Length: 72
Image 1 (cartoon, rainbow, N blue to C red):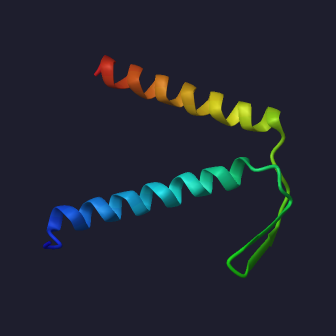
Image 2: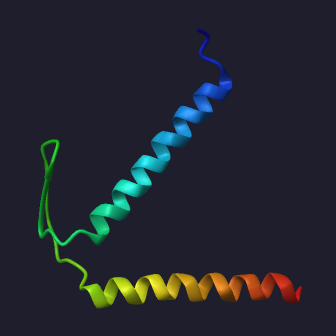
């Protein structure tokens, strides 16, 4: 089996998607202390209300962007 350019791009894309989803999972985690692979992080967590506001803001920004593109 040859390791082609397409396979390389696919592996890179899958790795990037995993890292992004893992970061999102950590961001929304309720844990105050995270210990992963020898890296320890103590942090403040977002409340459920804060997460909801961030998601709503993201949706609102997307709607505004779509409206701007449609009006051009």
